[in-house]
Length: 126
Image (cartoon, rainbow, N blue to C red; front, side, top):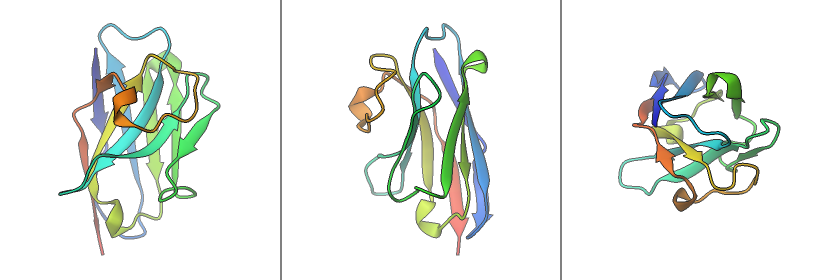
């Protein structure tokens, strides 16, 4: 199974980007998808999660109100719409899949996720 993240780039503060993550190969019967990010010298941190139903979402406090996660199970794809970007949002963004508890809303640790994409760089200039 592969998770392919795309959509990163360079944007000025206050701008927007939309990240995509597509699952391919032997796709899962049920899974939740999430986004994490990792800035240089820092640990990978949770950003947002979408449960299998597509109706339950969870956001890190630092992105709440600015980022929106959405998905399409039929297309095995999840998106992260990022608005009002700040320089502190600069990081490599990773998508990840949780196949063990896909309907639980609050799972924010990296150890809960079985599959990871390769990451896409987001750089926000001031």
